[in-house]
Length: 59
Image 1: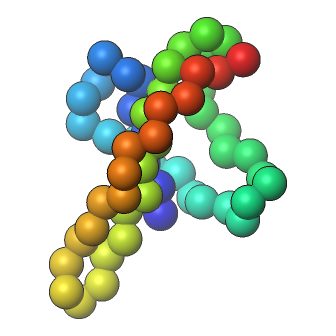
Image 2: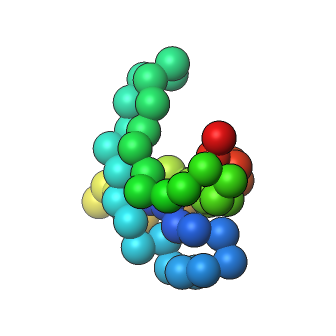
């Protein structure tokens, strides 16, 4: 599972996305030029771990 947020706006990664294999796209409700931060969230019986935050600018 992944999470996303608008950079500098939400601050809580409150939007969940399903991750796809490399080469596929994700859909984020934002306008061209917006900066979005993404991270991976994994959960198992040991707890929840978050991946490194990646920042992208939509075109």
